[in-house]
Amino acid sequence: MRLILTLACIFSLIGVSACGNGSKGSEASAERSETRIDEYHADNDIAMTVKSLADALRVGEPLDSTQYDFEGVLTDGQGSPLYTDVQGSPGEWQIDVINSTKVMIRNLYLGDLLPVDLETYLLASLGISEADMVEHNDSSIDNDDDTDVRIYHFGGGYMRFEIRAGISPNGLEGPLLNIVLSTDAPSEASA
Image 1 (cartoon, rainbow, N blue to C red):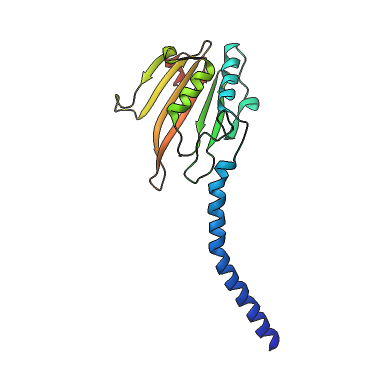
Image 2: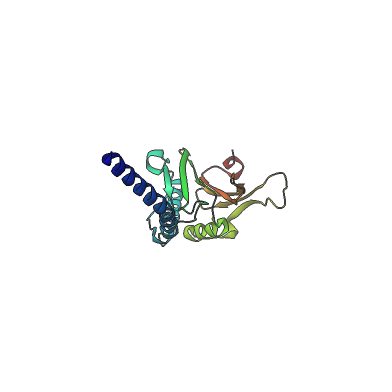
């Protein structure tokens, strides 16, 4: 009988302790998600990646998926993630070689990405400007398509920015960005 009472006391103490730690665990989890972005550092700079891809296209080197395909966090020049997703984590990207002359870079999740700032950063890193724009389809002008498309010539290829608004299942909005680098002419790059 004593054994049963002792075990009952131990289990009830464990249950009370677990209930008390539940709120502490969620507080600790919230603290981890807050500091996760501040402490995150990586060397997958998107500008260096885009420059490498553009240089390969300029010299006619066939793009190889084993060398360039990637899924993970891309960063700015200081090693900070380009955006934070709606869960508070560093935003993830996918780089997908479509064929030997075409590659797509896209953000996988909605978040606080600033596509225009990223576009400016990439144009500066490639040494191209607004004067190198060969096509612009602004979604606010053309109501049939919700995608804002800008295409730039970088000497040996084209860089296409496709920006559209996305909505998560819980109603949060954010931009979805596709960056396509290709040797195809603009009319073929969208195909």
